[in-house]
Amino acid sequence: MKIRAAVLEEFGAPLAVQELDLDEPRAGEVLVRLVACGVCHTDLYTASGADPSGYAPTVLGHEGAGVVEKVGEGVASLAPGDHVVTLFSPQCRECVHCVDPRTNLCMAIREEQNKGHLPDGSTRLHRDGEEIRHFMGCSTFAEYTVMPEIALAKVNPEAPMEHACLFACGLSTGLGAAMNTARVQPGTTCVVFGAGMVGLGAVAGCRLQGAERIVCVDLSEERLELARGQGATDVMVGDEGTVERILEMTGGYGADYTFEATGLVGVMGQAVEAARMAWGLCTIAGVAGKGETLDVVPRLLITGRRIAGSSFGGVKGRDQVPELVNRYLAGEIDVEPFLSHRITLDEVNRGFELMEAQDGIRSVIELA
Ligand SMILES: NC(=O)c1ccc[n+]([C@@H]2O[C@H](COP(=O)([O-])OP(=O)(O)OC[C@H]3O[C@@H](n4cnc5c(N)ncnc54)[C@H](O)[C@@H]3O)[C@@H](O)[C@H]2O)c1
Ligand SMILES: [Zn+2]
Ligand SMILES: [Zn+2]
Image 1 (spheres, protein in one colour):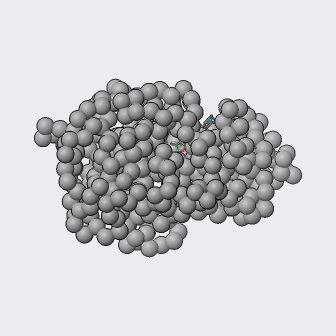
Image 2: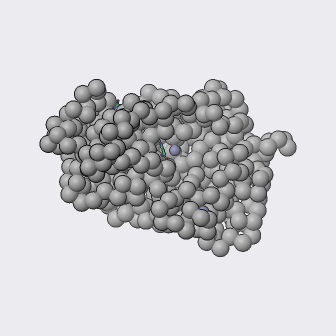
Image 3: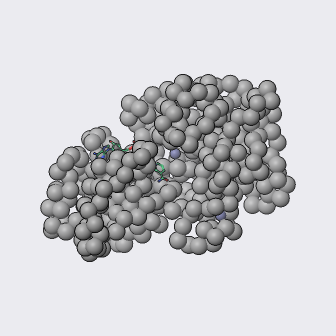
């Protein structure tokens, strides 16, 4: 079929919205009509050429929500009409990691996904016979996409798509960092560095876990205001004195849990230092620049601080994204403040500009 999609032709150049051919779903695959899609830093990171593993031409986008149109052979868990959220982090439910409760890092299709292929090693996207690669296994800056069944979470159809799509990446990452990776305990003190989509999600996750005190640190007063809306009890503009102020606020000890959601290694260091001696856990969600390293004084670890990394918040997507969406529908997560701009597919490059200008938390492309 013919579809319209936003193609990354060349690193550093604007995306080009154009007509492409999309093949029928093969065995284990699903054709999805996209309704909404968030514009994320990872899309821009690849578009800019900064990502060393990036490839082109490809259809970007990975924060999609839509409706199943058609299923390929052997697909049993989804049927036409189902509402789905796309998962760049799939869940096969069978591999060594999927059967272990400690991780969400599914191994089933990793290699081919990293090459921009569907699991069988080919692409469904073409242009005059040329292969167009699938970005993060999703390629959701498009009217339709074909994705593996194991990379789609079936969600409650009552959830508006423009909100549901935010659970495809940053929001679930932040929520999951607090709920799965750190497993924040009730009555504790948490500090979240960064109040973008991921950090705000972490603030909400700490609140849902019953934290007593949630401090959010960011450079933007506007974003700190959003953090209050998600449950931050204290907010602070970050600088070199941040750690000292957090120690002062916590009787000189530091916080039970800290979260880093900026991608800056300097801030990661602060998040480690702000974690409490004896048992403080620092969870790192930010993605650092290529080649950057995190410097940690080993004494901080010997005296009981721990550091954990979190990919997609440790969320096992097919099981947990539907649960998170239901908690949102039950009124436990306030998603509307994250949706800053509604744009069309043709305005996708404007979505990047808004993000670079830090104008709002998320721009969402409305496709239908
Ligand atoms: N681990 C994962 O699976 C995963 C998933 C999605 C995104 N990410 C990463 O998470 C990070 C955050 O993503 P986002 O979409 O929320 O980004 P964002 O750019 O919207 O938010 C980052 C925030 O950090 C703040 N900040 C900058 N310097 C700071 C400082 N010195 N102290 C405190 N705050 C500071 C900025 O003001 C901004 O609000 C990125 O690195 C992104 O790549 C990771
Ligand atoms: Zn994303
Ligand atoms: Zn798996």
